[in-house]
Image 1 (cartoon, rainbow, N blue to C red):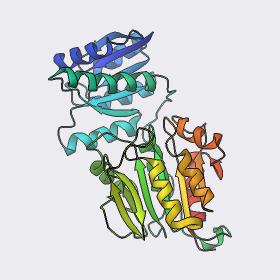
Image 2: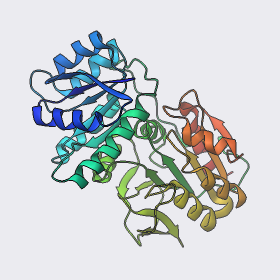
Image 3: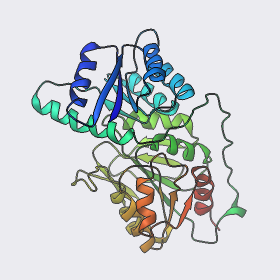
Length: 345
């Protein structure tokens, strides 16, 4: 039986989440908390398998609660937020940086259809995220030193002009680790698909730009690619490239995803061939695996995150299992490999 603790200062919201979770016989709500302080106490006492966490609460807010939980009793945390404005969305990214696994929007149940949509999303997330092994987070770690351009370290292969990065669950922190180490004079363009809740892409771009020396922006249809720039897929649109320009489309989901990593990787493979580099990071499912194979088949190169450093090894494992990984690396070694592969020989 999966044990869940619900944390929210709204009694109505707690009841809605309880009603949603109670529809699954494998889930049991073992407690509720109205603020962060109660949440920490109940995590220590009840030892739930997962916590649904509000952010804006009295006494102790969600960020403080997450910090205490990750330091004292690391537990999977799903942030459930109203996402009322840009400020609250930015706070949610801080929650992820502190150790929360993912964010969903607070369910607004006005009809049977609303309830079914919320039930499908929240029940699935709770069941999947509860299986993830989380680790103790120590705040105030020193920041890693950013890599420098050094032509002598380039591989003896054609310099990759475009780097395509794909990630899902656990991706925001993994992507931050990679981009924060790349230098400001990085010679290639970076296209990125991160499976993320609707409305998060602009805030995600702003958040990443504070963490990296590169320019980060939400991709716009038709704009020309530039070096030293990271282009993030907008919500609910596939991201691709044609003749050095961004393409966005509302085509059918691939692997139940839109945007899809496979769509991006295939596009980059077709357009850039041996000058394409695909990087597949942590995430559930198999999106990106066939895209990695497409890059290889067009003489490009693929870097896949290893199991030890992946929060969720689903997508990387899918790529490795079909022989679509040119190399498998721990997360901390991926930035240097990207730099080596994009420098002129």
